[in-house]
Length: 407
Image (cartoon, rainbow, N blue to C red; front, side, top):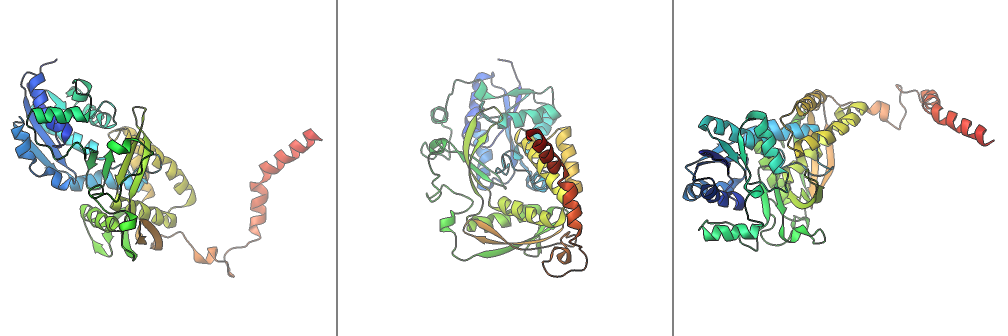
């Protein structure tokens, strides 16, 4: 193996990165290991992390508070785009990786590191997201991916390795789901979820962490009003908040009412299908409210073209191509479309459902006098005859030509 004197490790304290520190020491001739954790809202998962990192062989641990930057520079641009991978997934893991990887590169360069190490598997998307970001900011930096090198073949064997090296773990063999948690979402993969025939155990104690199942939600509905300025949420129920506060507030509210559960078989970038269960309570509310407001504020052609852009934007985020000219160009387009997406949206939350209750905007393109079924003085219904004649001319001509051929 290539010799490295100093390695910066993307460190979460989970199963993978917990065993990686001693493994790097054993297999790379005892290099210095600097652990870096990006705080994107993992909460209590960061508790005791420094002690654990140092005890297992790291020389130091950086814990970087990235939460507000995460919301403003990654989550909200994706929300404004309306980007959902394969029409459903709200990209919670996907857009968290670029901001974490970027900060890790910055620390690696500051520390004079020879390489960056990550715990992503060779089957997953995250290896691509981390390494494309490294290429964008430190193209010559060495990269170590133990899952592509070591003899460990499963999470069970990782647990065996941890136990043999006295590495403390917060999981057991029975609760060994692969999870990713941040301010935006929580994902669950593995164990019984690997078979799509198995229904997720939403009501099993300890499975859901950000909310409850719809069956366990309150029997009474609750209203929430979200205010947007240029496509960005700025207030909840009339109270101005930071981006982090908005997401946290809506997570609690959405979780309470069983909002934002998704069971999805998705197409990974590396080619295989995978099954995951996602909790995204606040994000699901924000996407719904933003979509409702756009129906009022965007003209038809812009809205329809933006749907195409949203699909491509979602692919770029999912594929780890955040730091690319195309993603930046699409964001510039999205920002232009959001100039008048300002207003208030009220939703009724009830047992996993979000029901439109009200939408208002000073830039509304909805004109009740034109749309009314009652008498109006601004729309001449006779005009539609000529419009239909011209709009339908290609259909009429084809039918006439077909009739002549058959005749």
